[in-house]
Length: 409
Image (cartoon, rainbow, N blue to C red):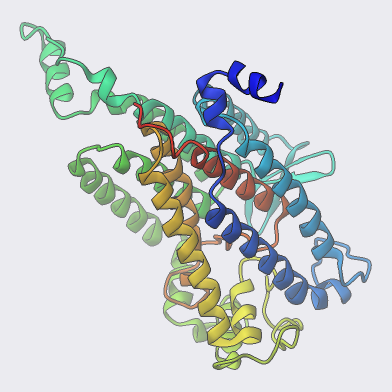
């Protein structure tokens, strides 16, 4: 009876029921488990003494851990559910995910829903849930770009013939020749999303969305000239922002010399370096950090990596970075072996997003990069962000189910 039922399934349904990639799953679960342990270790002092003025922990040392653990469970469930969906459905879902993220980001500017923090307006509160809509926008943009650009070769066809008798026709022919016409829909969508995020004063979200989209464009075969031009334009924009906004100028000054304001804005990077240096080779031991006792701000959030270095030492920090490296390498391996172009672009985008977040977070807390406010995937406290990250991993696992199938366009 079971065999007959299996024969009645369509080819697509049978492919979607293939085995998930166990090495990738094991790395995700291992990083999530270690992340939960480190959130518990890094946050219990702050929770016990109620050091965060914006949150009333009521002296419960497990306050942050219990919430992170709850969202981790929800995220793992979502990951397994999404991994069982035929990833071809993500094509039509991409428009709705992107549209929903735009609507949610606009809700930030409505006083009833919007919430501010750290000088930025980037959170939405719906009932008991408080989250950053830009987290959804990251994956929404990647899904939209992957769905559209996966059909690029089949949609290009023979070159269009434009009338050379009119100015409009001549301009259209030139734009088509350099490949700009096919990029216009993606430029408009990305421009709209980035404009909304920049209005929220969310620099880290702007960087991640832009680079996630760029990774999909690069993997789709877009001419490198566009990346050079786009990179130059982005560099010029960042240079202008850095030299014409007091906020960014101050950040760059602190980055170059945190001791110029050791009790103000330079306090956090200085304490982060003290935490990293205090760990030495083998660390002071799990749970024995001294910097988490009101010395290092955001010790369970963006600056959790210095606590890892302090408690687990250079050896432990290197092990965790190696796990991230293996996860990223495995993700790109799955992208190379995906059944079709859409699967490849989707996995490249999500994997690149994870790689960029990891690189930027570790680069910032170690002083290699200027502050950006980017969290460390699977580790930094933030329940909805963790749940969304695990859902993204579910998409990659969904693609991995069809790797054994013949290649398709």
